[in-house]
Length: 205
Image 1 (spheres, one colour):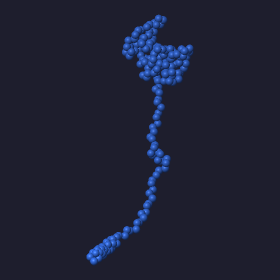
Image 2 (cartoon, helix red, strand yellow):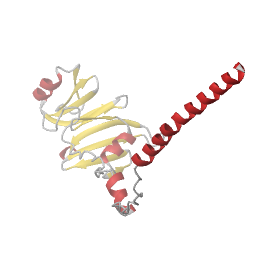
Image 3 (tube, helix red, strand yellow):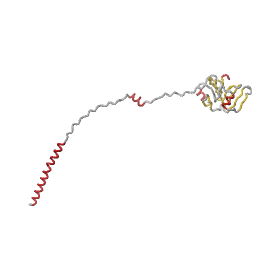
Image 4 (cartoon, helix red, strand yellow):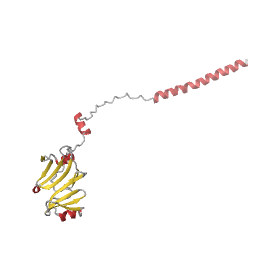
């Protein structure tokens, strides 16, 4: 009998407990329904096509990749006037030569023409005729020659490249001239080798 009473109490408690939860659950559900906010329909935002400014390919290439260019002039070769050779002009007298080069190694008098005498220097010989410069002679073993202040190799090829085509040819060499000044390259006919270089005035011919 006691067992039936206990079971009855338990069932009553469960029913009472269940009855209390129903209103709470119902109220919670109602609150959810009442407080729920309906989401507004999603609006479709119109997208405007953006036009990207562009340049024609040629313009882009010219603007972006163009490199400023400067016309490079070809190197101008010096114009030789034959105003001096090894620092000596055709108008220098013996005192002017000594002032420029110092005392010569020796002075040699011509055995046949007493008015001619030669000032010997290590790299050249200067011949005077009655005190006037007759010619300046550079031997074949010279490595360089200075013409109008510019040093050049003392070879036929180097001098032709610097001075251009010779003004005329002779049996024993070639001649470059500028005004009354002449520069003659003596060349051996058989070996085509440069033997000496002479610088002189037209009046000395």
